Structures are given as structure tokens and as C-alpha cells.
Amino acid sequence: MKTRLFAATLSLSVGFCLISTVNAAILAKWDTYNDSNATGGYQADATLSGFTATITGPAFTTSGSYYSNDGTFGGTVGGASTANTRGIRVSAGFPTATFTLTNSTGTDYTINSLHFDYEVREAGTGFTLVYTSGGLGPASTTIATVPTVPFIGYNDGAFDYTDYDYTLASFLTDIRLADGESAVFTFTTTGGSNSSKFIDNIAFQGTSIPEPTTAILAGLGLMGVCFRRRRRY
Image (tube, rainbow, N blue to C red):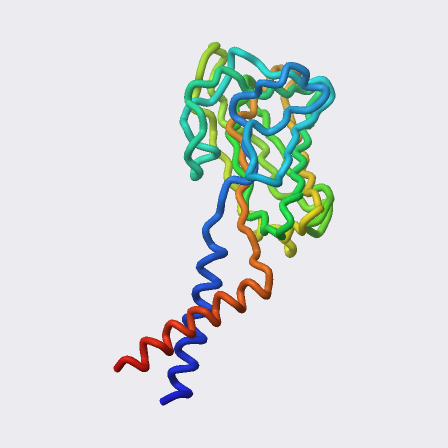
């Protein structure tokens, strides 16, 4: 009986630890773009405490006429602003935006996913998304190659851009970003001429990884509760 009880409580303890790691949080997000100078990089509008994140590109600027207003980062993560009137503009003249996420939390995190909305003003235009370098791996891994993005139109104003959501574990064998490490991704437009394209509602999601000592103590605490309850009957 004691053996079975120990096994059951150990299983509950492990389950408790696993549950504590599955609730992903937004680590960094861009959806209002208040930075006035894009050449210095767009700092994330908000980050989880201890993270920093920047988008850089060769002289690309935000636009006050084109933006996604669907209220989600990509198609699955809620909480994006519907009131913003800006989106990042890229084109054939400066086609690459570089996303850099840095972990300075004191805790390791898994970087679970990347989400964004994207719109083109020219048919036959696509993009590539590559994990370039940093604490994840392997480096230079292609996350997406999209040859054609749905063409929405030329009218100024807000649109419901096409949503893109990428689970990084589907492409990378190492999604653990240790404290002090950074991860760099590059988004590059493909096809078309110099007509502008716009990215908006960008977010990274991730999950903290408990320290082994913390996980063990949490498990032992749960086991103690189970044993005390057992003694009452």
C-alpha cells in the first residue's frame, strides 16, 4: 500500500511540475511602435520582466496608414491593440527585419512560438522567416518559406492582415533560451518590386523552466500533503 501511495504521490508531484511549465506567457510584443527612429531599432512595446526585444532593419520606418486591427497576435494570441495606427513597413529596398529577443530574467525559458500579421500591396509577394543565431538551435534554420501572401488591396486604413503562427519546436531541436542568452530571427520579403509590405501585431510566447531544486521542493511539498491526508483515514 505504501509503495502504491508513494508512486501515486510521485506521479502527482511530477504532474504538478509539468503543469507549471505549460502556461505560456507573452515574452515580448510589438503593436503600437512609438519609437521615432527605426534605424536604432523598435523596442518591444511591452516585455515580460527581465526580457528585452528589438526589431532592426536598414532604414525601414513605421507607417501611420497601414495596420492590422484584428486584436490578435497572429491568429491565436489575444490582447493586441485594435486602436494602433502603425505597422512596420518593409520593401524591396530594405527587405529584412531582424527580431532579437534577450533573456535577462535569471531563469531559463523555452521560446515556444512566434506570431505576427502581414500584409502586401502587390500580388506575387511572399516572405521567408529564419532562426539566425543565438541560444536556440540549430542556427540558420528556416522556419517558413511563404511564396505568396494573400493580396488585400491598395486602400489606406486598417485591415485584418493575414495571420501567421509558428511553433518553434516544430523546426528547432533546442528551444531553451538560458538566462543571459539571445535569439535572433530574420524576416525577409520576397518577390514583387518596391511596393511596400507591412508587419504588425508581433509577439513571442514562452514558458519559464523551474530550477531543479524548486521543482523537487514543490514535489516533496505535494507528497507531504498527500501523506498527511492519508493518515486521517
